[in-house]
Amino acid sequence: MPRQKSNHVDDPREVGRRLKKARRAAGLSQRSLAFDGCSPAYISRIEAGERIPSLQILREIGARLSVDADYLATGAGGPTGVASGIVDAEIALRLGELELAEIGFARALGDASGTNLVRALAGLGDAASRRGLPHEAISYFERAVDESGGDAARVPAIAECLGRAYGVVGRTPEAIEIFRRCLDEQRAAGDAIQLVRFACLLGYALTDNAEISEAEAVVADALENAGGITDPYNRARLYWSQARLLGERGKAEESSRLAQMALEILRLTEDTYAIAHAHQFLAHVYLDADKVDAAQAELDAGRPLIEATATPIELAHFELEEARLLARRGDAEGARGLAMRVSSQLGEVMPQDAGRAYVVLGEIFELLGELERAIEIYELAIEKLEALPSSRHLVIAQRRLAAVLEKVDRPDLALSALKKALGVQERLNAPSD
Image (tube, rainbow, N blue to C red; front, top):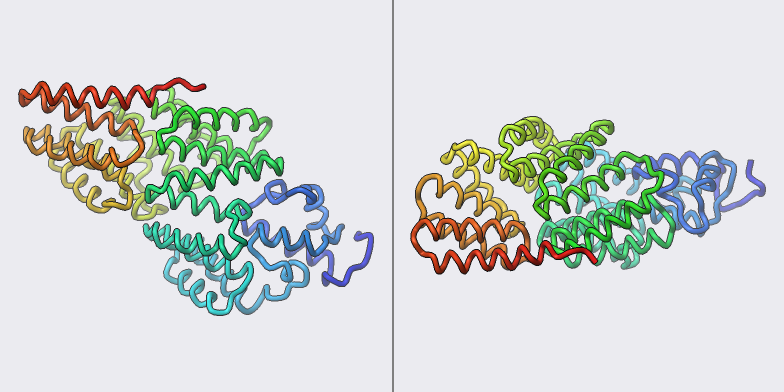
């Protein structure tokens, strides 16, 4: 029982009940919610009604859960009004009812303030992301961060969404900066689970930015801190991070082994979204290794899952792998039609994947014997990919271009393309410090 009475809460047991409900709704464990001055054990006692948290602690908990401290303390604003509308919108969002969720969040914006305003903005950002509108999502997430005090690292759930959205539109350095700050914050707080989470996110972003050596160092540090963590998502994240790095190094066998381990862990969670993306990644690795039947099996398994959970951009990524498979199978016409549609859809939103789509198109024109057209498409792919940090996809495009130029008897141009590919490859294969 509480050691002393307090007039800033209505009833300790009700405070505990509301906190537990809000924490579960946010998808956080007691350990993940804990911070300096509020240990997991203390949170457990609050939820059991055995401790009365100070108003300062309630405010910090409320900020981390995106709920009002007054609601945690007294229930004010919880069951009715703006907060109720936001809860309904959040439920609609989880159910995939995007239009209903957007209406609810938009209605709340007019009257919401404090954490309710942050929740409404973050909800609209999430809905925009799911619709495949990353620029709109960024606008909402940035506003949510501003309303939270301007420091993304203090609202890790929103920081993750904002960082991912930056990555989608090619603003990778900004994603890296956010994930670095969040990683430092979690390291200072001593939260091993969140530390692994943001180390993996930082590793992904560094990999996308072709900073492979640093990404390997970050993931290695995460492995050291993983210790006795048994949470399946964090174990899967670590395997996934290692798989991506090995894939970027061109080590298909090792990459596919770790990706398969991540997939098997995710199967235990029954998380359809994560499992779908694991199948997609494995298909990508198998296609790189020319294991067509294995890639086919992964895409067949992932297709119904991705259709049920994906945003339009994520579905376009999946279809890009399907186009690659059709090309490997010799279905040039089917591959060309699908790759052209995907490249048009990605456009300038995802320049790297648009570049990859053009590489697939170039391969298809090769199969059709339209070599001049293939050269034109490869050059377009290289133009897009060169505007980004060096990547293995740029190496592939340059090598394919060199091969076609050799076929049409342009050896000097072919040699130039190969030299460029070698230069990028050497940067990618630079050893870790």
